[in-house]
Image (cartoon, rainbow over all chains, first blue to last red):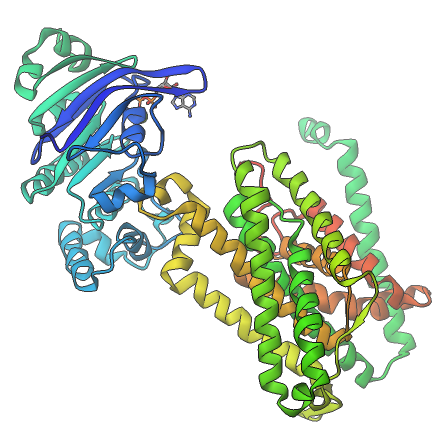
Length: 237
Length: 353
Ligand SMILES: Nc1ncnc2c1ncn2[C@@H]1O[C@H](COP(=O)(O)OP(=O)(O)O)[C@@H](O)[C@H]1O
Ligand SMILES: [Mg+2]
């Protein structure tokens, strides 16, 4: 049984048919990437999985359980966490308070403390700035905070929406290293990216999304070799 | 230069003249009053202390506007009725009976605590009901819709409680222990005013700690900033909004009892004026933070208590004290025109929709 299964999902914004029958799955322990151009429906896919948007048709399963009856905030208890598009840090809360919010649903004080130390060792910069208001962090630091905050939920499935967006190339490498590291420690990851080049390097498998439809699905290696992907997403003629 | 001149519109000039006129009038009146010196130092201290007491009440009520605006960007016009419902109910069902059996004056502290808790609970209940029935279903409606509903809810509760307890003015029982004055640092202050000020400060501090330090308080701030992301953290957004309403209403409920101690009467319409004054205070304070609301309330209370004597009498206006409400509402209009971001803090904003 896959950890996450999206089955024939249709989603709308008013009359806009944003997802036209998406199916994908993510196995336990994998990094799966969903690549596609701007406006393809990547964020909508993640919003549907995380319960922020209810599909009009189709289903989402987490470890075999239909998620239709859960609200977004209940899915955290099922092991799902998200790094939202544009990072979504609470800019008026301090770094430490943002991390507290990541662990909002947890009651295991010792475990939370343990995870706090873990994310601080992963991102020492955040430790230095723990009492600083998040709005004053740089873009790269905010991305670290958004990732760290999601990890504070101790998720089994981590959804990431364009973590490399708007970051300097040198920081992008760091983010993808971190993604691999988090995955090696046992977290399954669904990674949405426009940066297909980097995403296909770290992912095991990938899906290509185009105007609300999945047009290609394969292992990351095969996708990298695929002439269509090379032309449209990797800039190779 | 030419472009700058052209960009100054007719309206700007009028507003500028208006502002100058008011500043001149205030300064003129103040100077005239100081020269004529119609009041003693004790008079001024009385005005000031009364202003602080009144202002602390505005501050407590203003918190409710501030919290709800912060989380929903909605001006909850029914907040004055949350204030009224608690104290009115507590007066009829608790304070009066406790007074009749003599418990109120036998154990004034315990009795007042019970009365206050009942008022807070009723205000919270009314707030939760209003939020659930009248506001929550409209969460995704255009912003004007909940605003109109709030006005409707305000009328509903006024007439509801009028029907329940009558349209007359009920006297709030006198607490013997709070009669008379207390001398603090050589200044004579009414005991009720001392109670009002001390209780308000304690409640404000408690609320500040709640919002800034507790997990629920952080969740309130997180939801205020981004509801979707808050939900992704596992925060139940609807529940947090309800808690926010209840918190503001609890403060209003407590303020209601303090108001009754100060003015000794309750009636179904009592929420209206303090409600608008507190809203003014919230706007003055920038409608964005607990200290902002507190300072806005204090400022308004002192201003309308000291102001009439200070600058209206100097202008030759008699019975100036009758004009204190005019001062408050003039201030609201002025702030909305000239400084919508408040004295400190953020704007009553359209960009936040
Ligand atoms: N809130 C919204 N209201 C209306 N249309 C939207 C909204 N969000 C996204 N869309 C539309 O849905 C489509 C998919 O958007 P999105 O999922 O954000 O794409 P991506 O994340 O791949 O850039 C786009 O056509 C976009 O214009
Ligand atoms: Mg997107």
